[in-house]
Image (cartoon, rainbow, N blue to C red):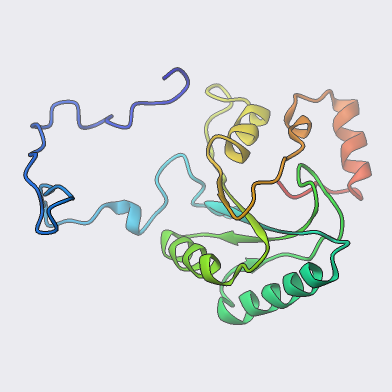
Length: 193
């Protein structure tokens, strides 16, 4: 597909895989190498292994719904207590950036954190919707920042619960005047993405 590298890059000359079934009779036997994938320890490129973290998790709630608002506050507190090593951000009580309703954000910085938190949220997110999107670091020559952010929030995103429509207009190329106006409207800083 245009715009996506082949998932088989690096395996072009590998021998064919066996069609032999595993003990369960459904899955296939895979060739064992004795070495686990490095993706268990470090996010694969182009995911950000730096300060921003590999994934942002946005947990949405309808700000005019008292039950959802209270659940979001309690869930945020529980996440801070259960996962004190994570970066957990403030509750936004209104739409901000591309996010259509109130939300709070959690950043994960390792595959272990990702696996633990996403599995935990599958049980504990309750009535709230969750957007999990990657933070990638493709060079601008490969993918301009606005295209990269749009792809990260759409094509590469994972949803838990009901999918909410994002305001993707924020990911259009901006002139410097429009960028300054957007920063000013967001309170002088940048809105979470």
